[in-house]
Structures are given as structure tokens and as C-alpha cells.
Image (cartoon, rainbow, N blue to C red; front, side, top):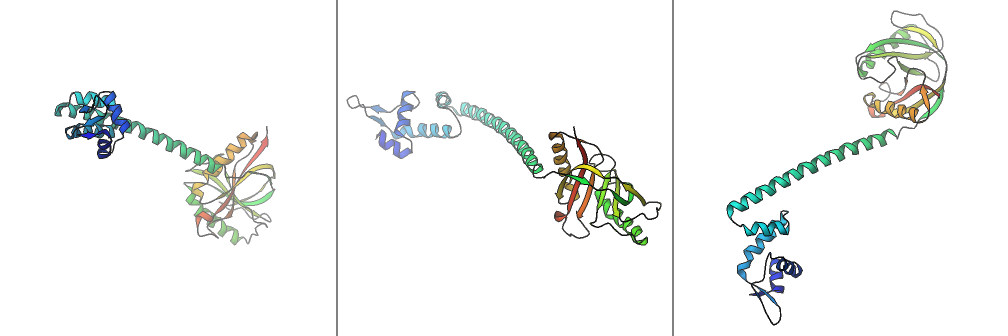
Length: 272
């Protein structure tokens, strides 16, 4: 026989817990001294205690444990454990769904915070004479062939670019697109040249007010800049009055790493 203190130490369970188990009829002492009230436990009670601790460790409540031990046969325990297994599996699925939703919302918030990193500037776009080439291109990679093509024609006419240089693209779709993009690439020049079958010269009027942001990185991620700029325009009481432009400051011609490319997105606007 073990006094409650010794039984507690041997089984690494508190005296308070053993007294509670006694109170609810889950594990009563083998003997209680009538004179002192001391509780004594026998070695034969160890299997029941270990079963209690095992069931408690896998999520059973004390009331569930008491009920299970009252029907403690192999068939009954298998049924009870399988039921608990299904309950835990269901809870895990529900928690995984919650985790997935948290990850989705977290990504959304991070993306929103990323968009807020764009600093919007209101500026004037100057009047310019441009050599331009308009074409529907399949994707952004097609710019790598379009600009060199116009560059050769400009070189053949010995055209002089304006200083500071202003090379930009006008998007005639009026919005950001991933494919089949109607673009007009423009290079500001000091004077008119001779039109060719694919390259034209024209004067583009000054834009009094344009909202702009700087985008650093590859063209494949420039949609983030558009999203941030459109959001700013809407929240600050502006409306779009013209086609968006992209002005190229650093790119494949002077930076090998696309992460270092710098593009200014410009959208003509006016206050409501």
C-alpha cells in the first residue's frame, strides 16, 4: 500500500488530481484510514491509473474516461478510441481550413501592404514630338524585339533623341493586360522624321496632371504598380482622363538584373 503522497510521486500526478479522481469516482483509494483520513493506494490500481492518464493524454475528458472504464472491454475500447480518432481527425480538418483561410487573408494583407509601398506623385507630362510604332503584341517579352526594330529605323534616319530622354509606351487598351496588348512605343525626338510603313511621327500634347509611381523590378510584376496607382486615384478623388503610359528609366539596355529595372507608370487624371 502507498500513501497518497508516495503514489503521487511514483506516477507523476499531483495529490490534488488524485483527490479529485476520488471525489468523482474515477479512481478511489484502495483504503482510507478511518481515524486519520489518509488515503492509501495499492499496486493493483496502477493499470487503471495508467489507462486514465493515457486516455486523458489523447483528449478524453474525465467524464468520458469514467464512462469508458465502466465498459472496459477490448471491443468497447476499440469502438471508443475509433470514435475519438474520427472526432480528432474532423477537428484537424476544420483547423486546417481555418489555417488556410488565415494564410489567404495574410497574403492579401501583405499584398495590400506591398501595394502601399508605391509613392504616388502628381506631375505634368511635357508636350513632345515622338517617333512611334504601334502594334498588338502577345506578351511583355515581345518588347525585346519591338524596341530594337524601331531603334534601327531611327538610326537609319539619324534621328536625335530629346534630352533628357523620354522613352515610353502608351497602352491603347486603357488597362493592364497580360496578353494581346495594344501598345504604341514612343521615343521623344528633337524633330520630325520621315514616316515609314511601321514608324510614324507625331506631336503628343502636354498632359497637365498625371498620377505616377515608380516600379522597380521586372515587367512581369508591374501589375502591382497599376493596382496601387488605380487604388490611389480612386481614394483621392481623381478620375482617369487619358491612356496609361510606361516611361522606361532603367531596363534591359543598361541593367542585366531585371530586379533593377526601373519603370514609371503614368496615368493622366483630373480632380472630380
